[in-house]
Structures are given as structure tokens and as C-alpha cells.
Image (cartoon, rainbow, N blue to C red):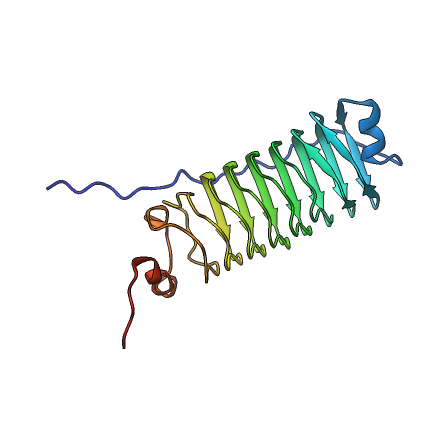
Length: 222
């Protein structure tokens, strides 16, 4: 009988944002988007964005540093070559948006909503992203490093070339999201919610495998 080769996830090779010359802006992003369909080449620093509600905009070659977003919605917005650093994006909605070469570094993303988004070459590092919502999204070439993703929602997602490194995935939701070939071995996954067919082929540690026996309905007796 021929034994098939084990599945191997395509390598994770995230491309960082490409930045060209930028100018510091005294205007808020909200002010720019009132008159512009595309915001390009702007650096936003130490600002407050409040009650912004925009759709079908484009943000390209921009950086956001120490910016706080409060009660904001950016639906179906295209982000290309963008970095958020030390920003508070809690509860912001990026529903149905696309993110290409976007980084979130040391950001607060508690309850941030990204349902039905498309993410390509994205990086999230040292972020508090509890209750983050990625449901029904397509994520390709992405790195999550030292992030708190407890109770996050990855339901009904398509994940390709994605890496979780030293992340908190406790009680995260992965129902109907195949995890084949994804390495979870150095993250905490206690209480993860996942269907048995979807966890097959995931890479886990021995300790994690013991925690996942509940999916098989097994009772372990020593």
C-alpha cells in the first residue's frame, strides 16, 4: 500500500510594507477622507480619530504611530503598504476590507472586527488582540508573533501560509477552518474551539495533543 506524503503548508514568507517618501500630517485621517478617495504618502502620529465612518476608500503608503481610533468604521477599504505602530484600534470595524503588506506592531486590537476581509502579506507582532474577529476571512502569508489572541474568532476562514509564534490562542474559535499544516506547537491553545475534521494535520506538541483528545470523546485514565 502506497503511503502518501504528509501535507506541508507552503512556507511563510511575509513581504514587509514598501514605503516611499511620506509627509507628516496635522490633519486627521477622517479629515483627509472627507475629500479624498485615496490617502497616500502620509504619516499620522499621536492623533485621535473619532466617529469616522467611511466605505470604499484606499489608504496607501501610510504609517500610523500612537494613533487612537474611537468608534470608527472603515468598511470595504483597501490598505496597501501600511504600518500601525503603538495604535489603539479596539472595536474598529474593517469589515469586507483588503489588507496587502500591512503591519500591526505593539497595537491594541481588542474586539477589532475584520470579518470577510482579505489579508495578504500581513504581520501582527506584540499585540493585544483579544476577541479579534476574522470570521469568514481569507488570510494568506501572515505572521502572528507574541500576540494575545484569546477568544478570537477565526471561524469559517481560509488560512494559507500562516504562522502563529508564541501566541495566546486560549478559547479561540476555529470552527470550519482547516488547520492542516499549521504549526501551533509553541502557542497556548487550551480550550480552543475546533471541529475534529479541521484539526487534522495541524502541528501540535505532545501536551497539546493530550488537551485535544476531548475532540475524540476520549476519557484518559492513568
